[in-house]
Image (cartoon, rainbow, N blue to C red):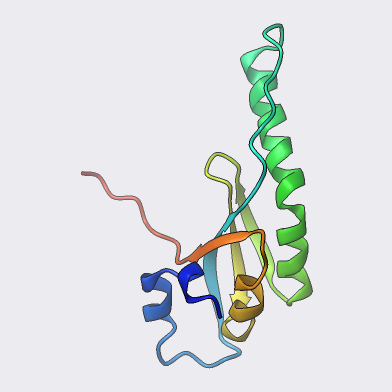
Length: 112
């Protein structure tokens, strides 16, 4: 498994888990940068366009997750990530995907 794609927090959370245990992960995707929009396009249209470009670019990773028996729970186009539920035993095959930049555990946001 490409160890550099799994965060230390994820590796630590896997300790003692059964191979068929389901875990929630955040998958960062390598998606082409959004194309520039003409100035005439409204801000809302640019956002919708960028979101769609992410969804289109992340589709192969989403299909890979599904083919491994996982489920995509959420899309976060701003930071180019997918939240997914996968089994521990499929992490290696998911991490081998060239379009996957990193895999992490979901983190709660806390106030500073």
